Image (cartoon, rainbow, N blue to C red; front, side):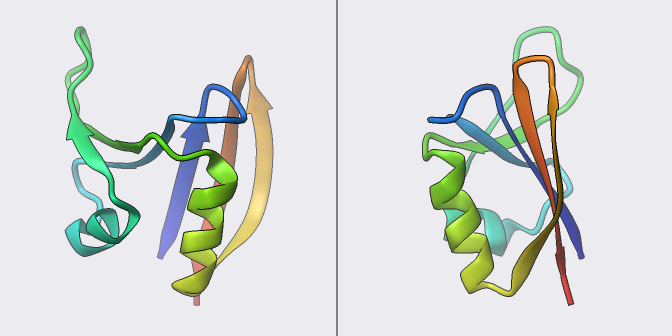
Length: 81
């Protein structure tokens, strides 16, 4: 069960899923589904800082396997055994 989290800053908002993400997990995170103007896809986001989201995901059994920066966006890849 791979999962990626993206945040354009260290304080949020944090993008936590796409239109194919597990609705129950998105609900647990308190995520809202949105479609940004010009995009042909939907995404889930939360206003929480990434550290809050990562702590919630850890409580569900997810572990960070990698992290990188892309421009001014931070990306975490997680995996659940």
